[in-house]
Each structure stands twice: as structure tokens, then as C-alpha cells.
Amino acid sequence: MEQLHYLLMKTHTCLNRWILEKAAALGLSPGQPKVLECLMQNGESNQKAIAEFCEIEQATVGSILSRMERDGLIRRTQYQENRRSLYVSLTEEGRRKGELLNQIFREADALAVSALSQEQRRQFCEILKTVGCSLKASGKDGENE
Image (cartoon, rainbow, N blue to C red):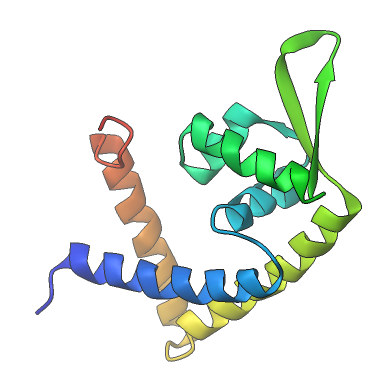
């Protein structure tokens, strides 16, 4: 039997490749789908919140945001009351691509669990949440590396 870490890594790679291929057809580069998903779900956010949502470094988010701003997907705003943070929001084009991306995510989810029953899908999601919580609680999610 294959080890759990390998199965999780292989599954993630397959799903991520499928999503990124579809996202590339929308003109999105790697990293941008996560950021769009964050902004679609949470609305205007600062770079730190986006990094936490995407589980990537703030510096990495900064370079992704620069490309997204250049491509007209986001705008960054600095408010008088908090000059230390830039707040990121979607442009109309960003929102349009975010809606198309949400459809890609729904298709990916459906494809990934297409061979499972409704009950198996529910259990699978609960198990993945539990595994993720166990890793976070032990500090083995990459935060301490």
C-alpha cells in the first residue's frame, strides 16, 4: 500500500495541474487562482490576510499581486487611517475571471469525487479537515520550516 504522504502529494499535484491548465486558458498564471479565490470569498483584503488564506509567504503574494495589478485584475488602495497597509480589491475584470475560476473549481471538485457516493464525499471531506487540523496543531504544515 502506498504511504499517505505520497497519496496526498500525488492527488494534490494532479488536481493542481488540472486547475492550473484551465486557469491558464483564462490568462492566469500560477498563484493567481488562489489570490482570486481569496478576494472572491473575502472581498477587499490586505496582503497579510491574503498570504494567510493562500498559505504562502507575504513576499510571494506581493509578486503575484504586482502581476495581477499590471494585468488589470486587482487594485491596491492605501487608506489615510492606515498608511502601513495596502488593501487589495478586485476590478471588474478580476471579478469576471474570478467567477469563471469558481466554475473551474466546481468542475475540479466534481471530477475529483465523481467515483464516490454522497456519504463517501462527506466522510472524505471530514477526514481531510481532520488531517489538516492535526498537521497544523503539530506545527508540521510548513509554518515552522
